[in-house]
Amino acid sequence: MLIKLKRSDCFDQYPKFPWSIEYRNKHFFPETYNRYVLTLPSKTVKSYAKELAVALLSLMQSMGYEKLVFLGDSTVAWLHQQNDYKPVREAVAYLTGNKVSKTFNGGLIVNTDEIGEFAKHLFWLVRCNAAFPNVHAMDEGEHIIISLCKYGNIHFYTLDEATDNLLKEQLPSVELYFLNTGTCYERFGKKRHIAHRETV
Image (cartoon, rainbow, N blue to C red; front, side):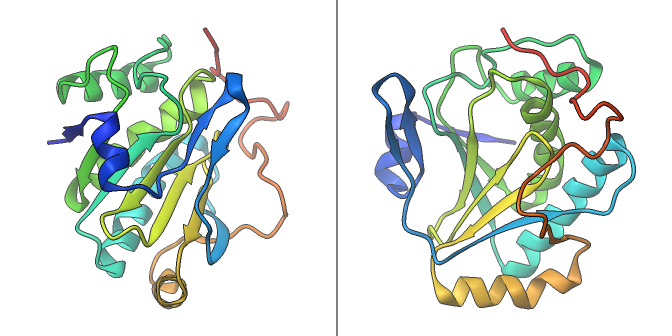
C-alpha cells in the first residue's frame, strides 16, 4: 500500500528534493557527492521493465533502505496524462487502486517490499507519457536521489561519501551496471524513437 504525502509536507520533511518552476526558469537540485547512470543488459523493453523492478528492489534491500519517497519536481499531477497503451493503463490502474487521484501531485512513500511493483509501473509512465513529471526518489535520511529517464536508465545520485561507498560495495550483487556512453539512448527501437510515447 502506498502512503500519500502532501506536496508541501514532502518538502518540509525532505528539503533536499529537487524542484523546478519552468515558466520562471527556476530550478533546485541539492549538492551531490557523485552521479551514476545504471542500466541492465535486457534485450527487450518488456523484459527490461521486469528486470528493473527486481534489480532496484534488490539494491535497495542490500543498501538497507526500508522505504523510498517519490515526488515529481514540478506541480504536474501523477495522472495528468492518459495513454491507451496497455502497460500504461495498468500503471494508472495501479496508482488509482492505491487511491492516487487525478489531481494528486504530492509524494508517495513506498515500502521496500513494494518497490519492485512500483518501479515496474513507474517505468512505463516515464517512458510513454511525455507530460509525466520528472519523478525523483529519496530515502528518509536523504542520502540518495534516484530517477528513471525515458530510456529506462536509473540516474543515481549519492549525497555523501559513505553512501557512495555503500553503493559501490552493493552494486555487484545485482544485475545493474554503470552506463559509460556519456548519454542515454533508446536501445529497444530500430528507428531510435520510443514506441507508444505520447504527449497531451
